[in-house]
Image (cartoon, rainbow, N blue to C red; front, side):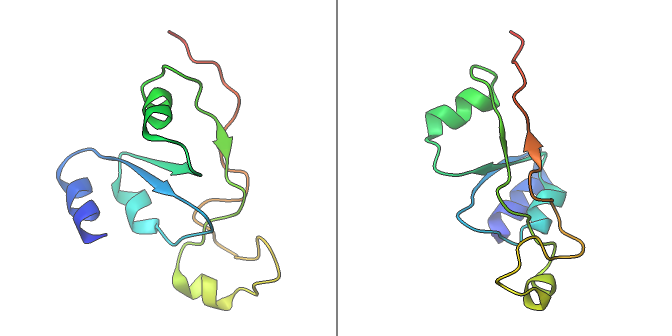
Amino acid sequence: MKEILVLCDTVPTVVAVHLERPAVIWDIAERSAALLATYGAGDEALLDGLFGRARACGRLPFQLPRSMEEVRRSRPDVPQEGGDPLYLFGYGLGRQSVRG
């Protein structure tokens, strides 16, 4: 992860993170030019959405914690329990049309 942060600090960087479950990525979110959450999309589909060749949309199916301390305080059987999440459940892009 250190290499990604160095890159983000050097040039504007778009970071795509594959999320199978919530992750603590506040440092990447703060330092990247854009942050994309993916759930198994292929590289071509990801780039099509990024460059406007396809409609990019989607919402987080869980909230992303701001810190590991927040994760430790949370109960695993209670969804969306964190008091100060980095991103809320449902955050993301709606069904917006891409203008060409």
